[in-house]
Length: 275
Image (cartoon, rainbow, N blue to C red; front, side):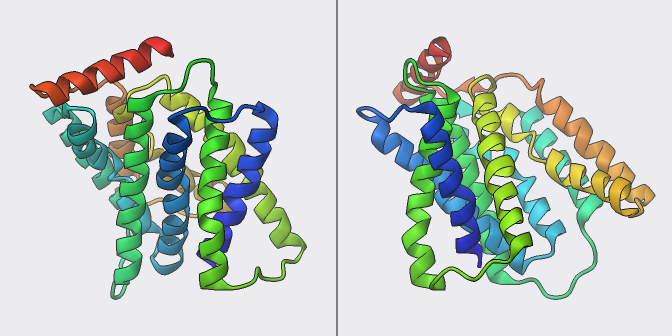
C-alpha cells in the first residue's frame, strides 16, 4: 500500500514538527508551502514507494541518482541558470557509477514502475530547485518549513489513500515499530536536516548527495548482512563517490540573459542574503 505508507510517513512527522516549531505560514507562504509540500512530499512519497514495490531496488536507485541532471535542466527554467559542462558530465558519471553498483540482470521492466521512478525524481528535483529559489520567510527556521511541507503533503495524500486503497490495514507490533522509525527518524529528523542543508547549499550541490543513498545501502549490506561486493561494484562505488565529491565543487552555473534570468538572479541573491 504505497499511499498508506506515504501517509503514515508524512503526516505524523509533519504534525510533530509543527507542534515543536509553533509557527504557521503567513501570506504567500500558505500557497508556497502547499506547492513545496506537494512536490517534495505529496507526490514524491507515493511515487517513490510505488516504484520501490514494482521495480528491482537497483533500477529505482539508478533513476533516483539521475537527480543532478533533472536539477540542471530545471535550473534553466526556474532559476535562469545554464548548467556547466562539468556539472552535466559529473551527473552522468554519478548515475553510471551507481548503475555498476546496483544493477543486476532482470526480466521485463514494469512500465508503471519506471514511470513512477522518473516522476518521483522529477518531483523531488523540482521541489529542491523551488526551495532554493524561494528560500525561507524572514524569521522562520528549517524546522517550521519542514513541518509545513510534511503536513501539507500528508493532507494531500490522505484522501487519495482512502479513495484508492480503502481503510487502513491491521498492523502488528513489528509493523507499528517500523512505521514509527519511518516517521520519526527517517522523515521528521532526516527531512529537517535535509531542508536545513538546502538553505546552505546550491540546488546542484544538494542533489549530488543523492547517489550516497544506494552506496550507503551497499556498504551496510556488506558490513551487516555479509553481502559480497564485486570488483565492478567497487569500481562503480569509486566513480559515484568521486562524482558526488566533485559535485560539491562545481562552479556556479551562469545566468541566462534577459529579464527572466535577471529576475531569478535577484530572487536567489535575496534569499541567500536572508539566510
